[in-house]
Image (tube, rainbow, N blue to C red; front, side, top):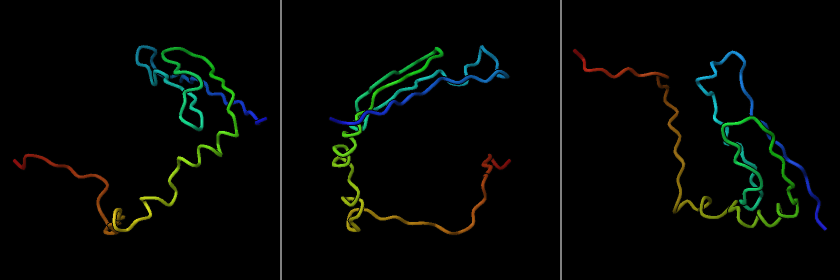
Length: 96
């Protein structure tokens, strides 16, 4: 028998934000370790989503996570880091 954890998420609003301009329209969802939607999405309303998560699925889900697979192959993947200083903002105009 597996353990089960309860996960919950809530939709938050800001009291100083105009009601006619939704800050976030929701979209809260709880996804299980194997990618199945367990609860939600909760759109355009306040609410609380709760779901039971089967912790035994964590072990099965790790088989889908390619930790040392194709990303660890230098013949396929390369990471380059440009360490030169650059401005945070560039303005591009017509020049005239």
